[in-house]
Image (cartoon, rainbow, N blue to C red):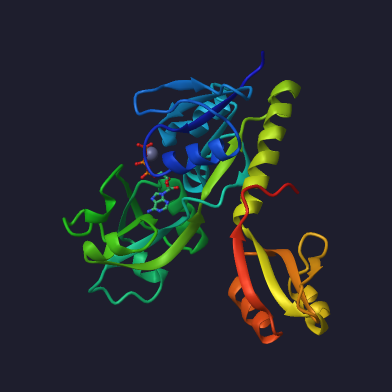
Amino acid sequence: MTKLKIAVQKSGRLQEKTVALLKECGLSFNNGPNRLKADAHNFPAEILYLRDDDIPQYVQDGVADVGIVGENVFVEKRKDIDLIERLDFAKCRLSIAVAKSIDYESTDFLQGRKIATSYPVIVQKFLDDNGVSAEIHEISGSVEIAPGIGLADAICDIVSTGSTLLGNGLKEVETVMKSEAILVSGKNLGSDKQQILDQLIFRIKSVKAAKNNKYLLLNAPNESIETITKVMPGMKSPTVTPLQEPGWSSLHSVVNEDDFWNKIDQLKSLGAQGILVVPIEKMIL
Ligand code: ATP
Ligand code: ZN
């Protein structure tokens, strides 16, 4: 039987959420720190546990058919593989940071300086785009200590909250790229594997949509139903059921997470009461 080989990070910041996503897609498999691979019991797939940096290469070579990696690693490794789907987790950015004491005004500061990073390809492109020539010093870990020990004038590293930078006496001065976890695929998987992948993508989209939407229930005076429908049109239109109390109805609909609180404010001002917000487990589009 054909199986789709899915590469996931063995341990690290992507691991837990990647495994959680695949499980939410209905794949049941064993995972543990000492495993190299695991069969899904109920889906034609095999999970391979790898270092995230190696995933693009393995996908290009066909050792794995698809993989889940940070977009930063995908861009840095420049392999002949495709970005299939953004996954809405492991959101971070690659930023340039310099010592807090530096009076940084523009990328001109970087001219002729030394920049320490684990992402030389991405940094070089950023420098080229900004017409700056600087020396890139590639190091694989603890990049943030480089300025303090005199190894570099600036760094380019992953930032999510910025607290690690602050803790090392640095400040963020340029965003080089934004990143999140993505699904990548090799070229020409063949029709059997492509079919399994399409099924997986369909499930991932349903899980993502569910996370980005909420089920909303509320009571409203009948004269507001039309206006409220415009605020929460839902997948087709809201369900409207009469309440026992004359002149009132209950409305049910799906609302997007974007702009959620603004919508709630609008609904309240239209006379909505007893508003309930319920998470959606899966949303089939
Ligand atoms: P490995 O041992 O597999 O090589 P690693 O140390 O290179 O792991 P991690 O720190 O686990 O990598 O990060 C993996 C990916 O998670 C990064 O490439 C990035 O896309 C994302 N990431 C890293 N740090 C953060 C963060 N603070 N917040 C959100 N996402 C992050
Ligand atoms: Zn890594």
